Every structure is written in structure tokens, then in C-alpha cells.
Length: 330
Image 1: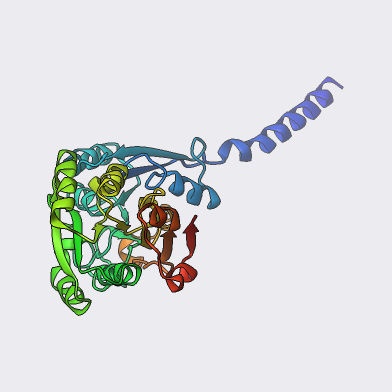
Image 2: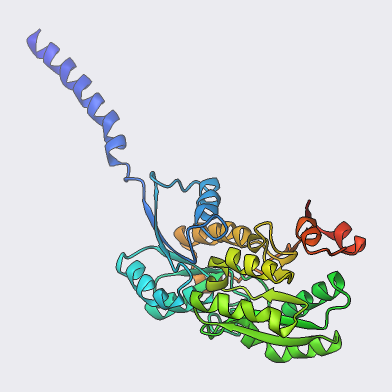
């Protein structure tokens, strides 16, 4: 009888153990570590768009995802050090927003996959071999090819201000990857066709902005186009305010630059690009190689027209332009 009870207890215990074993044998859920190298922690360029995109794909920060955040805060000289920090943390993927960040990440590692965003010409800048076949360890979402992009900006300025003949280009001359310099010939040809004289407004640091913008009044410019860059994005409000002080309308490359002050913006959303980068991160974490993932170009360019800014400047924008806008600020 005792032996029988012992046998039953043994069978029960064995059954419980066998039932528990599959649970114990299950692998611990993987925690992915992502490095985000961005321009600032502001909403326009922050990794929150990346977080949203990854959440939709099942990657939840604090559960199976860790994001190491590093920001230039407008100073591209910080990029190499910040990229090296991310590489030192042995992250699985680096998401790099803007050319200086991509270049720094590329120089810091040739093995960790890099997903680029907010880069106008990744081929011309030497980041990838081609859009279809990137090669190497870099892929991602481009903001478009610069050939024709700045020309379209000039066309927008001419449409909004038909009498404009002098346009200043405000850009960071310390950034060798700036597409103002990368597309100088195409831009000059477009300006000539529109009977526009371009005047470079070079800045190299935040301290240069006020001095350069103050010169706008002296140069008699009809408009200023702000070329996209970590420095100009970081200080966009100061730029808008100084331009308004001299009653000079500003035009900007992406919706994130508007801030209720610029007269108009035309371009792809930075936030949308960062959100789309989540798809690349997901595929790489699941085993895909960056070299095999074609670089994606934006499919949507948004036109924003600011009637409030126009009213403050005493300007009447053409109704055809206003009606075509994706967003109108009243």
C-alpha cells in the first residue's frame, strides 16, 4: 500500500515537473538596444517618432527595447564623440538623423548597421553605393535628391513673391555635407531661369546668426531660404524672429521648421522619415542585412502656407498657392 502511494506521488510529481519544463526551457525574450543619434530632443527630430513606429511593430521601450539617445544640440563637432559612445555601448543598430550624424556613425563602425534619415543625397555624400543596392552597413530613408529640390524651393518663393529678385540662402558653412554646397551648379541654373539673384548668408555657429541676419536689412533681400542643417534647425526660432524684425519673409525645407513663423515650407516631414526608419530597424533586428535593404525615398512632400505670417508682413499670397497647400496656418 505504501509502495503504491509512493508510486502515485512519484507520477504526479513527475507530471508536474514535465509540465513546468517547457516553461523553464523557453528562451528569455530578447532586449534590443538601439542607438539614436539626432540633432536635438525636440519633437521635430526626436526619437519619439521612432518609438511610435517600433511600438507598432512590437518593440516596446522598457520591455524588449532600450534606446540610447545622443543629441548634437546644433553642434556638429559633437557627432564623432557621440557616435563613438554608441558604438562603445555595443548597440544592435544606430539610427542617425542628418548627414553629420551619418558620417560620424559610418566612421565609428563598419559592422553595426546604420539606418539613416533626413539625408538628401546618400549616394552623392558617399554613404551608400546606390539607392537600390546600398552595400556596406548603411541603409534607411532619404529626404530626397538635392538636384531639383532647392530649385523647387526657389520656384515656391517666386510663386509666393512674384516680384522677388534677391533671395538669401542661410546655411551652415561649417557643414561640408550641406546640400547648399553639394548642388551649387543646379541651384545657380534654377536661379538664373527664375531671374533670381542668390546671396549666400553663411553661418558657422549660433553666434553668427544675429550678425548675419542683421545684414539682411542692408542687403535688401526679398526673402530668405533656410537650408536644412542641425544648426539652423536648433536655432530656427531665432532666425524667424530676426527675419521678422527686418520684415523679410522666410521659407523653410520641412514642416518642422515652420513654428508658426515661416511664410511657407515645402518638403518631406522629418518626423515621418524617423517613423519610417522603424521599419528598417525592425527588419535588421530580425536578421536582414543593411546592404540588402534598398534606401527608400519619400513619397509625400508637404506644402505649408502661413497666412498669419503673410498678414504680419503685409503680403497677399496668390490664391492658387493657398488652395494647393496641404496645410494653411490662419
